[in-house]
Image 1 (tube, rainbow, N blue to C red):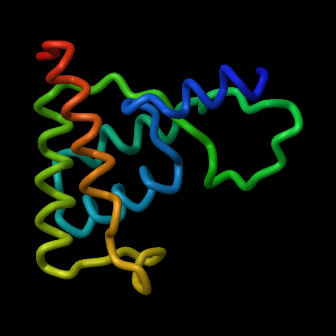
Image 2 (tube, rainbow, N blue to C red; image 1 turned 90 degrees about the vertical axis):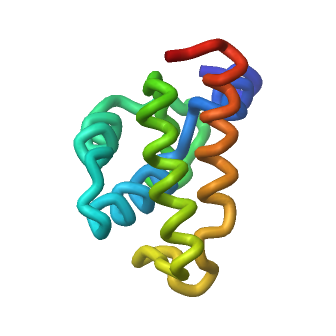
Length: 117
């Protein structure tokens, strides 16, 4: 894949990084959330093909999600509550959950705009 189309895909609200998904998965596991199986499934899948010259770490893999509005709302609630409580993950202890709520809310808004169920 060429860089231009790859960047366009990665800028879509329903395309999220492995890193964000793994950290959300960790939060969901801490909360014993029903969203864990969805996160497990997406992370077990195949990420978008990267441009041939991209040598970045596995954490930069990008995945296209096709979740329902209700599923995304559960994640928004999960990360919002975690941030309000000051909960972090193994990779966010120093910086907190800045950007988590915004990324998931952006996906929720995207679904709302499309009238997704």
